[in-house]
Image (cartoon, rainbow, N blue to C red; front, side):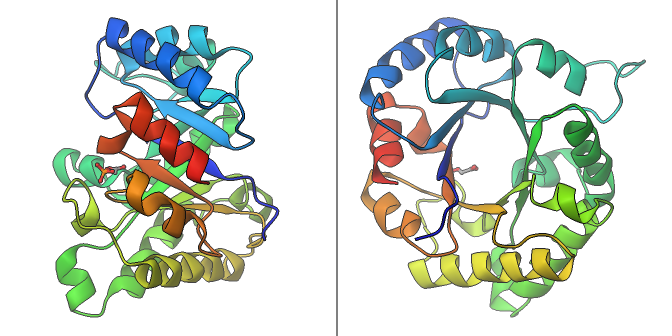
Length: 249
Ligand code: PGA
């Protein structure tokens, strides 16, 4: 068994008002009271303060789903790391495939965001993953390697182990199609090897799997040697389902 503490994150995407976020949090906490895992909720910006206020003293911390790399400035509609820190946010999802596909985020845009997050003591949850076409063309490792080097290449080796990497095959996100245990393990082991080649402490870095994780498949995925947690979308919107995933790790 690895010494890496399991990290289970709920990515709510553009779901839940403040009232719904409060209700979810109040329902979740008693269901995971015994957990020793790191449990993270990533609400929309508008519900960060609500969730952060309610989770104090529990195993749960709060993460944002995006941020800008500058500390402040004329960037209408954007949120900085300092603003997140002000709300007791501890981590930030960067480079989710929806940000890459729908909002044009590239590794060149993401690299300074990762650095800004680390400067502000926010843990970057850096998402990478191949499309179905790339997998079918045998390009999975090349894509993962390029995303890691493109997004994290500017970090010094000690900073690399502070990043959480989320492996999310694009074809498995929101589709109900989960990677097989073999595919998830193979990709996460490869990611760990690249972090090692980049000079990071590969044994320390936590690597999550994401893509249609649900109570019924979480146990098998989370037991894989190189999978240290999960980034959960759809199944994280319901407190019973998310608690079952947390408690499967
Ligand atoms: P999903 O989303 O669990 O709904 O597939 C995962 C994610 O996008 O992080």
